[in-house]
Length: 344
Image 1 (cartoon, rainbow, N blue to C red):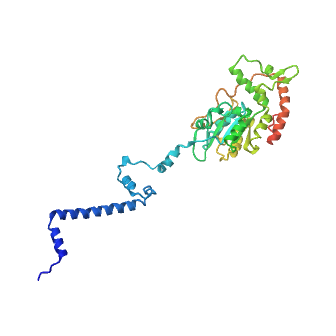
Image 2 (spheres, one colour; image 1 turned 90 degrees about the vertical axis):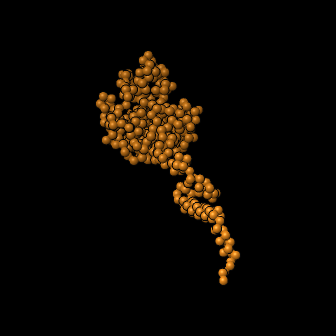
Image 3 (cartoon, rainbow, N blue to C red; image 1 turned 30 degrees about the vertical axis):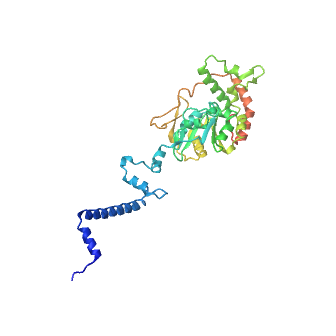
């Protein structure tokens, strides 16, 4: 007796149809394909860099997985370390603010040997002549620095510019300030020598020094004299910056012991003492030290012909009157800084 089942009969009828058999096979294959794709997405979503968006929509991730290599957009975060490799421009953390003809160019050139110092070569004159251009203009002048490097610039006229302390303080109260000072009498003669090289027809040093030579009244309106009244200018800076944020470098010792002065500067900036005696040699012709190897070069480097000019002979009586004039100001400056520079 043959057993009869309605279910068995229906399946037998279904398989007897070739079209229906193909449809069933295609359906099974589609289900398996969807399952495998879904499983793959679930696994890949746990891999770094392929995490699905927070919305949970897997369709975006599937599109990324199926995209052609040339169509894929790099993840910005994955490129961050590469883009930062060239550094970024920052406002200076330290500024050489003065003084003119004190040795600021020599100091800057020496400091640029240090791998953690990046400095502008030209003088920006931002806080005295170009302030209206804004801080972004100023920042754009700076070299790119990496993490841990210090951005610097030098403009010697800042020290005697009335508005400069307030402007630098407004940028950052933490800015470290460096002043290279020199015997004010020698500095004034050097200042005059520079002007004389550009304008040979200017009056003599002696005639410019006095308002009235007979009475011996010094003309303090002449910039060559006025710059050397260091105590007066320092008073202005101390209204905005504490003394421990200002370093005074001796222009004389920068010549006689460059490594020693550079050691003080590196300490002040919080840097390792990398610039030492081995970086210098004394040039007898110019009368000051030169670098054995300049920044980015394997050759010796001395400052240009505009440095170390021969001073004209000045009447000794005028020199002595200037020394007498500066003495009280020097004494006050020694007292303010807590250091005797030995100019008297």
